Image (cartoon, rainbow, N blue to C red; front, top):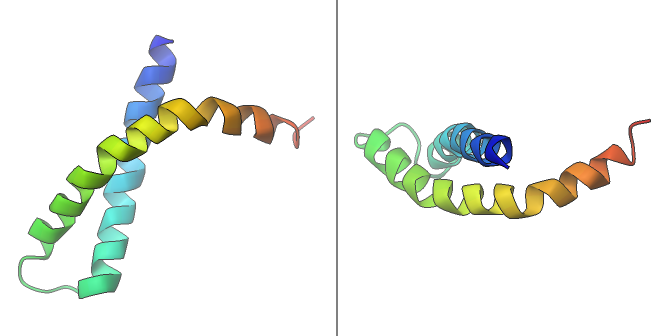
Length: 69
């Protein structure tokens, strides 16, 4: 359980950090204040992604195992 929590926190942190940068850049470009927009988006996305990763992650893991012998 502890490993699952740590994985969900770490994976959601890294994924939302990078994805929020990409989506913010696509939406507004590299403008003055980009970092503020990016960090605001990331702070909103991370908790949601962490909860989703923790709750849905095991089901996705089981589902993906069906494709790998």
